[in-house]
Image 1 (cartoon, one colour):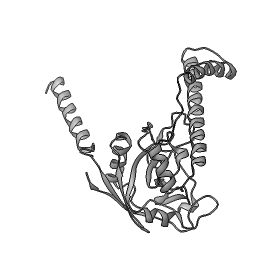
Image 2 (tube, rainbow, N blue to C red):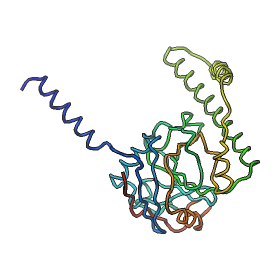
Image 3 (cartoon, one colour):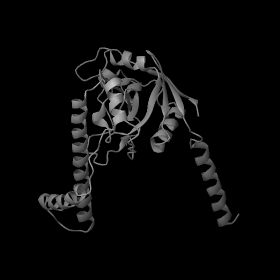
Image 4 (cartoon, helix red, strand yellow):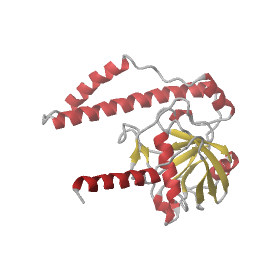
Length: 271
């Protein structure tokens, strides 16, 4: 067998393997999350394909089965996806986000209304690109807000976006200096980044919560301060009462429930 033929066979096998494992036909993919407190049905957004396909792969592998909701904050959100919670009660474990990450997929159509499914991530100081955790997600409970509260949320969103951009520019500048073999002080790097930031701000347009979204936040509730900085990739279509039930459990000072709330099974019920 010649070398070119061997390469062709290998390439064919590789393509088949990828095709078999890649999600397909995911229009309006719906998943069922069966928990110890009830069932939640969620629609995944096609406008965030990286997050959608990653979530589907994890579901198909059985990754989430037996995992706990390890962080619960009433009137905010319920969070799960830490693989360590499979083997021990979540109240005895630190909150870990040290898994692989996914590039952010921000879409102004998808926002943190009640029932939104979003990806957890590390903070802007260590994650200026706002990359998502590969496994951890949260579902928004939130609260109803007034126009004044929504105005403050807009200010916070814009502040976070600008700070993250500046942190990213500092990192890019430092990396460029290092690759060029040059030596610069932190102050010199920050000065270069500041000039680039000024140029960025000359074209920056403030993030605005749309009128339709404002109405939803005022009537149904949510957590708008996370919009534009955390990736929303789905929404609850059945089981908002289960979100409320989980969010209402007793928690300790670290936001961990006294009694484990387990995900019994997540499965795809519609493609």
